[in-house]
Structure formats: C-alpha cells, structure tokens
Length: 173
Image (cartoon, rainbow, N blue to C red; front, side):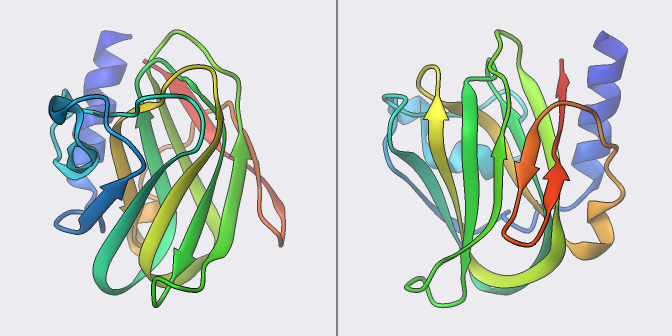
C-alpha cells in the first residue's frame, strides 16, 4: 500500500492544480497551522482543519474564469460524508455543479470526481453538508479538462449533479 500511495502522490504532483495561487477563504480554522491555504500549497503533509463538523466550507477565487472538469479531495481521516461544489463567475450568483456522499472512515482518503461537463468559473466553493467530525483536507485540487482524465479512478463515493447521477471515486491510503 505504501508504494501505491507514493505513486499516487507522484501522479497528483504531475497534474496541475487550477487552484494554485488563488485566494482562499474558509468558514473556520482549527489553528493558524491549519489555515485554508494549506489545501492549495502542494505540500502533501500540510492540511486545513475546521473547528467543527457543521456548516464548513472553502471558497476559492481563481482570479479569472477557468475551465474546470474535475475535483480532487485528499482528506484526513475520511470525515466528510456529504458535500457539494458550487461555482460562480462573479462571486454573487452560485450554481451547484456537483453533490456527493460517501461513508466516513478512520483512514485518509483520496477522492477524485469528474464533472458531467466542464464549467467555466472564477469562484469555486466546497460546501461540507455533513461530517462525522471537524473536516480536514490535505488538498483541494481543481482539474482542467485535459488533465481530469489523467488521474486514475478508484472506488467509493456516490455523487450526483442536477443533470446526472455519477460515481465519485475514493481510495484509502
């Protein structure tokens, strides 16, 4: 399993994150060491952590509209059980483009999901609708249409959008 995790980290590092360099806000911070920008710093050991399980979110301002085709969540202890992704071009009007649920667990997880179709957005918000404990993420990666298919799919979470029902993919490290 250790070799699989190392391979996955190398693969992830090779695929650009559209969120790198963006401005980020969080609903709460466990401590300064667990600030929101830790999810986009490309350090696999750093992480954002919230103060509680209820009402948590991360919001990114990419600076300009980007085509987004997929999202990766690298999660500490698989605490998040229900979430959705919202996008906006102006930061005022938001559209839900993806909703997902999965089982909680004690292991760190890597969840990658493709949107049914790429969306153009300047602002992206991960809204955590339910978690078994305060959520914590090592990474939130936004994938461009050309890089979304390059990351391997694993199995686990169930997800849906208003247009279709999809399978998100979740692998334990």
